[in-house]
Length: 383
Image (cartoon, rainbow, N blue to C red; front, side, top):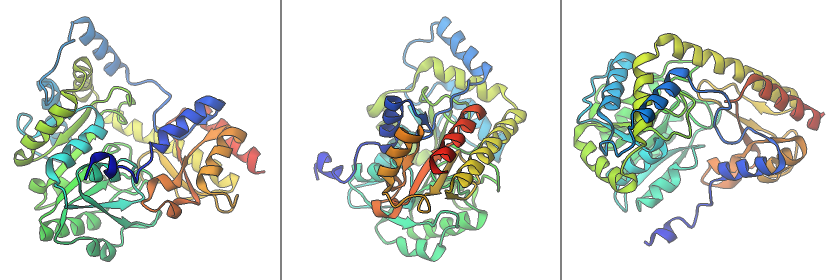
């Protein structure tokens, strides 16, 4: 199948479209998940220093040695994982490129890739670009995974399952029981677990457990993460992949031909942050986001939305059916233009758009004053 035909079922990024709408009408952008507050001084100063030291040329294609060592040390410190920085760590241009590189390396045309929905909008197209069939397994927002439904989604053709924990857009954090059941299914069907753990340090309830630490999963799990969310540098595009050596070679080849390598001075800066920032930074990060979460959830409920407080990540998926009979796109555009607050239409997170027609997603990676003003605007519109 030609690539153009493979992608016909997908539209352009709805998230970035809503950012353009917010810019055009001067709305508060709670659509795209980028912070409006500064990155830590240590990472900014390290980037400046690297540029002044003329770290301007290509780094090693699969990542600067210092950063790969820092990533490996971090996994040991946080999760007790032994990671070889030379053979198991690859640095990419953000987690988005990381996910594409992984699937293109491991998935063949005709394979099936299981994707839990609602899902971050890139996962479906990533599978389609591989010539694979995405198999969507519904997870009701606010509920855990229906493990029987998940088991029914596996087949002889299943090559991989894509997991995102903490989850965007629901905020669900996979439990130990869920992870162990998924692990058993992967072993039974000889499938890869490809885990997007970019929000691993933005956690409020539960414990973040990497799938790779589940017994029997180290050699069949590929872990994707990066600096964007943890250090509030979404525009730097520094992602990471931790994979067993048997998979890393193929992943690195795809990565090389996709992007060659991530920005060299910014890799040095991320390494400095991983080496320097201690546990207090990560505790404070979660505490600050918890306060923002509580502020926005309270405002949304006061305005008439139905929503659950997420256990992790920095999004709220809200049901607006008590406020309007409009579809999600019409409602989102009206919120942006009339209330001055831009969300993301919920349909962008589902394979069947009708499943998200009564939902919108709000990002709360914003300063408290901005979130307070957004809440005031929403309440004034729905009063």
